[in-house]
Length: 115
Image (cartoon, rainbow, N blue to C red):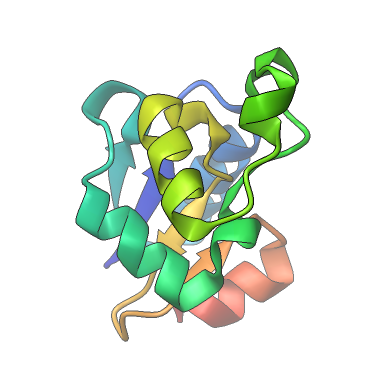
């Protein structure tokens, strides 16, 4: 079983759920908009993927930040910002049984990642 982190109402998340259902892939979903993200999880994701990879700079939440917040330049600043604004975390963030992480959804890459 895989674990998918994200926001339920996100269009990309809906594609991931539909793909998993259509391909018989069991998953556990963690809605970090509703449940939040533990600091330790963010730190682990930063170690595995890099904090720059985790921040969604294309979404409306990013555009609403002031220039000082957008000037994030360290992992510590990024973690604090993502804890305050969970919508800044790119999605989906998927964890497979091997403890590896994948950000985003491309059906071909996703298929090889979860199997």
